[in-house]
Amino acid sequence: MSIKDSASFSRWAIDKRKLYGNLKKLDIANTLEELYKKATEFFFADEEANSFKLRRNTDLHPTIKKEHLWERIITMCMPKACFYNQFSFNRTNNIDLVQTDANGAICRLFELKTGSNELAHAAYEIIFYYALMLRARREELLPAELAKPVTLTIVAPNYYCKNKSHYRFMDEIQKNLSDNPYYEKALISFLPLPFSSRREEFEENTRKLRRKIIGGTIASDNLKSFEEYFLKNL
Image 1 (cartoon, rainbow, N blue to C red):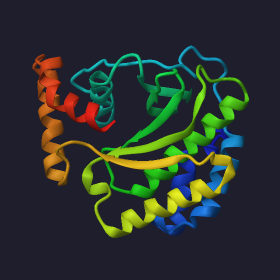
Image 2 (image 1 turned 45 degrees about the horizontal axis):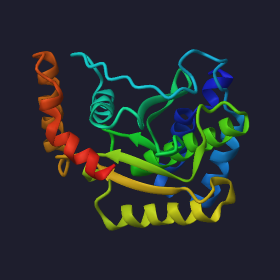
Image 3 (image 1 turned 60 degrees about the horizontal axis):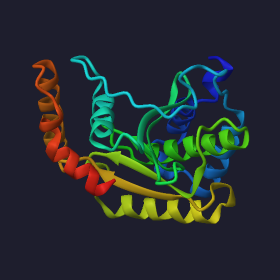
């Protein structure tokens, strides 16, 4: 394993899961401190063309991964002037979606999940990427200012966050983000993907989108219901 791999969030999550199982078992205050330290050790890309840039990729193709499909659908539904995807720190560590405010400042970061249902993994991942963004600001690598506070939003199927333990966990994450001065009182939230109360419902909805791509019929008018949903909730 290379030094770069050892500093990645994925490697960190794998190691923690081996020790604790679900990441919800971690002490939140200590974990936020640990993620901050990990961000200082992370290897940024060496001025690659696609790193530290606000960009929009809306390419859809029949073999696209499920997560990338939803990421690009959301990007297509949102205004071009304020919504971007795949903000890159290096080739393998990207923020899925980024939103800017009326002044052009980065105001919201999104972590999109469509696979497993481990809420804590998504929460800690977006917090880690925010820590990287704070470091990138200090090193004058960002293409825009950072708003205060920045909102960190998990976008995932509704069943990711539907019971009291999930809500308590998100409340505790918020309290610790507010108490830790490094994170500048960042806000954290959860947004369910549409038609995703049950795993079967979400999977069928995703298959329908994929069939439209394969059939060459997906277009802006096919996305009307999604556009209304995301414009209303994001």
